[in-house]
Figure (cartoon, one colour):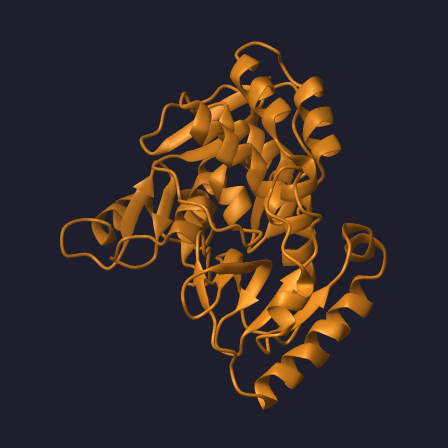
Amino acid sequence: MALSNTSESGIVTSRELRKAGVTARYAAKLCGPGGPWRRLMPGVILLRDSAPTRLQLLQAAVARFGPDVVVTGADALRARGVDCPVTREVHLLVPDYRRVPAEPGMLPRRTTRMPPPTSIDGVPFAPPARAALDLARLELDPTRIDELISLPLYWGLCTLEELSEELDSGNRRGSAAVRAALRRIDPEETYAHGLAKKLLSGCPLPSPSWNTTICDRRGRPIGTADAWWDDIGMAWQFRAPKQGAANFHPLALTATGTVLVRCTIDQLKKVPMEVAAELVRAFAEAARTPRPKVRTIGRIDAA
């Protein structure tokens, strides 16, 4: 039996099996109790008797609904490295002219605005802005909506303008909560973090903690770090202090032996390679010196 079109994941359609000479009756037997295969959906089979991985489930969804569907929502964000929880159902965009069969575990949505997909591991994914907005539209909790639409900005995948344009281009029905959340976003803070995260993805440095308050040995705050490498005591600051927030002098940090790298958001945008080179140099310097006697408090988001 030759299945030339079968992906490495083992997902195959009944049509491909028939072309390979496997009858429907024999396939049903192999998918039966004690058989080596598993039927995932009508017309879609996994060539092993085990629970499918999430990727296999996505590939099965595309095989079931056709190559013109696009996976959106959490799966499209996760495919680009975003750390967000997987949803119970696979969220699919389907052309408006298509009839959509009901399928457990699938959430197909017909649309007249099919986005240009990006293929990753054989699965067509929606652009980050569309994926985040589609995901946010499923939520009712305003706090959760705020978090979801910030994700592509936080991870440096799109701009606030691109999010706004995508929202304005779509159906306004049911979008009031998402629009309100979009107005609440602090574009400078969220986008700056996204730029920084994107920059670090190309650096030979370990992942830092984010938004950390640094204290002396007695626990008194002496500074903040937008990114912090705790093992070696290195801080990176790239955002301007907020109005009304405590403005710590950089000398308070450097006096403890903390290696501090400072840059502007404009530098993150225009000369990221230069900033990255400075971070690598500073990291090597910090690794050669004793760790400063400082502590950290506040929000520490390992990324």
